[in-house]
Length: 123
Image 1: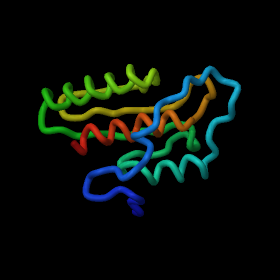
Image 2 (image 1 turned 135 degrees about the vertical axis):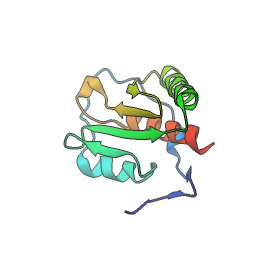
Image 3 (image 1 turned 45 degrees about the vertical axis):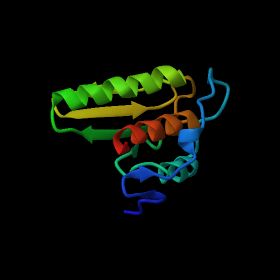
Image 4 (image 1 turned 120 degrees about the vertical axis):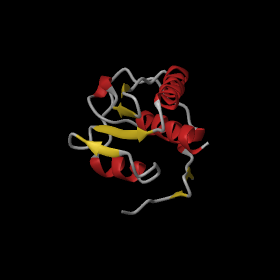
């Protein structure tokens, strides 16, 4: 697997420096090629799903406390960026799924938020 510009658990990307731009539709979702290029800037656990219309990762933790702390931090990112993923979690795992509902696929916003979530676990 090509980890791209991801090294030693720290994402080396400019995505974390960007802010989400509100999307109310009227734009096309990213192509598979565009999504794959942005995916290479993320932790390798992020996978493209549903024909590159969704972006998902599963994070594993030592216990429920750490899992819940991560979920709360990811929710804080979502609120600050005004871009909200689906988050499912259990005792030691959290699954985060991004896609831009208004366009029925992926936008750069999804990758910005995924990079910011990566920064939570790299810290």
